[in-house]
Length: 293
Ligand code: NAD
Image (cartoon, rainbow, N blue to C red; front, side, top):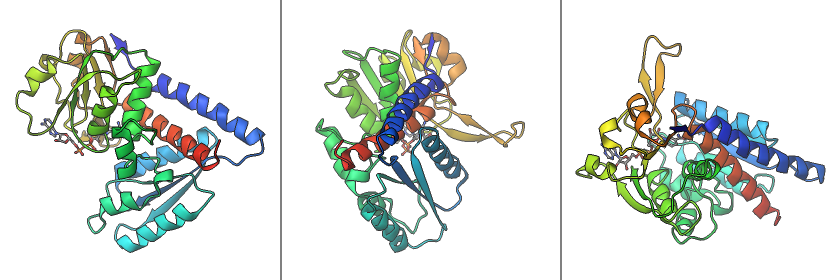
């Protein structure tokens, strides 16, 4: 069994990005710049945004974090996005989800300039992805594709089962794996909360991507011998014995599933780190587009 270690894989991607950034700086150009907006003080969102900012610094990017109160009006958030859209010094914009109830996530996603849409959530980016046109790929599926490439996982002709159909993970993942590209050409089955016989379907999978947000949902009796298992799930599960009072659990029961697989991602230390790598790649791409490089 090959452990698809996100630490090694993301370090490789980040090294490449750092090199390219150093070259830009050496040529007298400014650094790529990511602006992140965080609304409220949700613990997990704080952690994700802090990590994104830290990773920007590590590769030599500039980053700006804009914090807004949880009760901020939608119009105020949209104004902040409009300012970032208009700022030529900002290459990529992300608004950390989820947002408080008074704010329409869809409006926010659509307010971001598609040329700065480094999360790849704008309908324009999603439409391009479906049509196989160059676009910003949502960071998590992008990170998984980078991981498949780095570990040389064969996808052509394989049956991939994607569990989850969100716009952020499951659906773009299913599109990428079915696309006519190097790490695509799978036959894809996309499953969701209304899928009957999930176990039967999973047992036919050469590749399983679990993105449903239910801790340890995928058990050994759902996985074929030799399958590749990609665990996207991140759920905080209360654990008074843990330092922080919780543990991070994936969607796969790792201990029992891993021995049956040919390759598997751990949680933590797997897809989460690759998501950041995907975001950094998108930010560099946005910079290059904006500078016509
Ligand atoms: P979501 O809640 O938007 O979507 C979950 C999907 O799972 C839905 O399409 C739903 O139909 C499906 N589902 C739910 N229960 C099911 C069941 N019993 N059987 C089959 N399908 C079922 O979640 P999301 O935003 O796609 O995130 C999924 C998980 O991935 C979460 O744990 C989230 O925290 C994690 N996540 C991780 C990263 C990362 O970087 N590793 C990034 C994004 C999301």
